[in-house]
Image 1 (cartoon, rainbow, N blue to C red):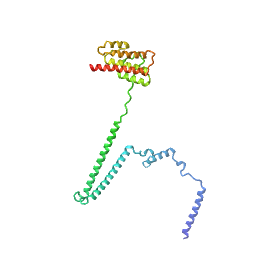
Image 2: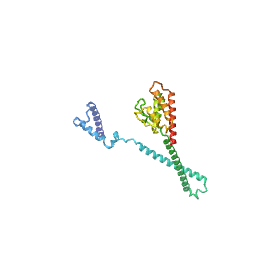
Image 3: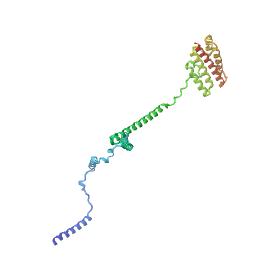
Image 4: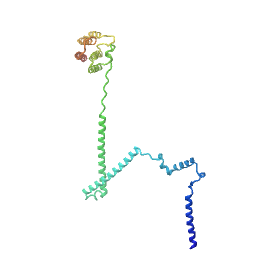
Length: 285
């Protein structure tokens, strides 16, 4: 026993002495300076370790991209079909129970028991689905047809362009109806003087379209009047109407006489009379 205790006591003393020596010794580096690896080599080793497959989750570039709209739509469609199938199954079971409650005496004879009821339920379910699809199709067709029917309003027709102040403007530059449209536009704008000339050019354009005068830039308004007088046999009285409108126009256009709505209405009345005579001539021909 003494031999066994002696080493134990000596070991305890040696441990105490070692702790005191350790406390008195300065802290040493875990790795001697001569055994340290260069910093560049350490960084390379760290990069190799971090790029290993087991650390790929730490790399942001390895993150999985969120699903696109096509994948999301596909998932939604799958879920919708699955939900519809489940709802269809519940509907079939409900119809089966309902039919079984109505015809308990024939559920196991004429219709093949539960299988027959299931068949009937499925048929009725498909009939309901087809009916619902037909109704939805009709609604969709109606909505599309209504959208096609609502067409955007047509753009207003561009007003005919002509320089009414220029003496070089001739009646054959625009057809009769466009001269009338220009005259109405000038009336709305309050320019009765230009409206009166547009109406007079509409009269000349009508006479030219009827073959009663030959419009030329070198001709004056009086030349057109004399040309009409040579055709009195074909259209009697036409020269008088034109002469009255010519004098009214020239008095307002070339003179100092102000143009009011009264003068424009008088010219329009003469134009309507001349057009009526031309139409009557055409009906005789």
